[in-house]
Length: 497
Image (cartoon, rainbow, N blue to C red; front, side, top):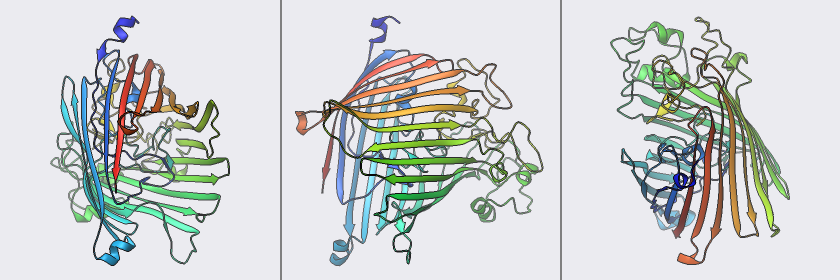
């Protein structure tokens, strides 16, 4: 690689007003606590590198706003405000709260676009919230800071517009003296209009998680599930007159996951499967809050049909352990957090598909009717390691017109953060994957891929405590084109109450 070619300037300017990114370890569904406040965020960044593709860990799990081809410039604006409403007594007791949030992102590339990853209005009663619009969200028991992202809903794609009612964090179950709490939501939304294959596609989503352990317990046990369905709309595949099953009667089947209602609008494909494309994960986790370290161990089990109920694909899933150091002692070098994960999706219930039982060849994130798959604007909604065919067609064969050509993967991932000299923060993510394509169209070989990023951060005196960040990321392997990039940013948070 010629050094002048690598350092050829390709500037990425970013302007934020807001705090729109959900962050932090997520041993529950939403890792966000709302306060009465107005938040703004300002950042300017620039980077250069070799190749036109943005390295994986610079664009993955960024809510779909960082282009896969490196942008010349990016401008972002974000505003969020939460206020207490109602009578004076209610405002003092913090019973009702209203909120709004909006974020606009303008990417200047060969195909410049303006994106709106957040645009919502919300109403909160105590620890319950109703919102409508786009809102950044993680779903599942996993570490969202240094991990690869939850299997089914990782933050890799732009948020879908939807209406949702649910809890904010865990809420104590009455009469359990705080030993049992739950976190849940229920939502419906819709996908983009101009999808490659389908149109008018709708989203149904819900989740429920339980936690055993009081606020003061060192050991906490957690478990639950999330359920997503693509349904309704139109598709040219396995439908009657191009229409997918729709209406309230079929919506009941979407909610419950029942096989079907007998009806003239159903095809043989509907009878042998479910109404809509169902997927999600069943999660379990253990959290231990020690004096020096906190531990979080989690497992996400994958389901798309009945394979998991018969334990046929039990080897597939996301396994993780997160270790956080609770106290810093000002050493010249400290590690404050470590996350190790192993993702495996190669089994899929086996290579044999049984028509009557619909078991085996689960073909994660692909669907016979919804050929554009578990995606939103050509981004995987779930784990970023099951990638769109458009990411692999530079070298590997396309899998018909299905969304992904590569859903049989294994990934070893390590994320670490720490400090130098007690004032310079550092973070790294490194991932190594083995990729086998799909059962129907295996890769000729099993291409391996390395992707990594290393960042340094320091709080500065200028602009009242702005933070500077320098990052280096690279991809090396046979799945993606080899590429590398360096980024420098200066950002400032603003919060008022």
